Length: 282
Image 1 (tube, helix red, strand yellow):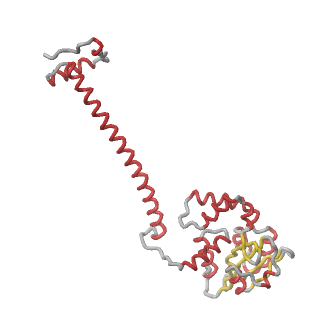
Image 2 (image 1 turned 180 degrees about the vertical axis):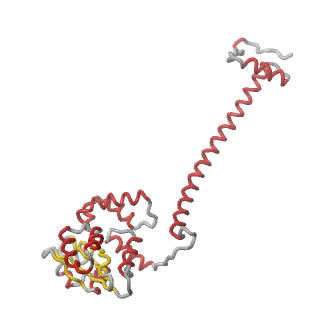
Image 3 (image 1 turned 45 degrees about the vertical axis):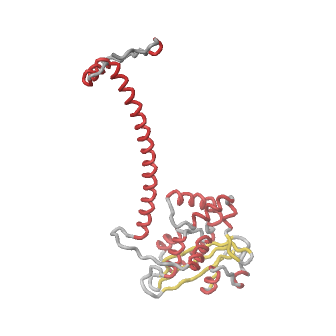
């Protein structure tokens, strides 16, 4: 028979909650050992279980991190899928753009305060307007601050200007402040179908962003990054709207300019259609 501890201080008194003593005695009888041996065995098991629990918690933390990473990857794949496939699962049409052309599109997008996608769409809308016939016309206008009137611009000058070159006969009439242009899309049968505004600030013979002067350096960096982002998120679009609201005084067409342009184009469409077209410019 095993002897107990030699010294009284090696002994411990355990106070059981109600019902626990009877439960342990039953287990001790089942395992054919004393109550004391049952308690010691349970304590040894607890240490082992605690170690296993710690390992399980670490594994759970690792798996949780992996699940979070996989959710991000899944969201990215979903976004790519939305850009490449339509609702029926068919591949959307896409174009591989040469790097030098992409750079020009990016510069035009920055100057027009648009995303790259929006700039491409605006350019395609000008080139392929929603008209009832293949015959259509584009008219280009420049708003002169001094006279407060719009002047026509030939298509070649407009193309040169958008590429960064300011033709002399346009530069002579430009100011050192915001310069507004508008492209009117005119259908041979339906008349005026769209007016697309453009805003530039001319300095040293090139187009710069006057609206940027209303932003801090950090906001300028954020705006440039967001406007050239290929993966626009909802929070990015919200931030762009906030920055555009701040720049609104510099990028909004003046009310007098809108009114005068409408008068110039009033004979090309009914009043209700003009209302729809010019509401977008206000």
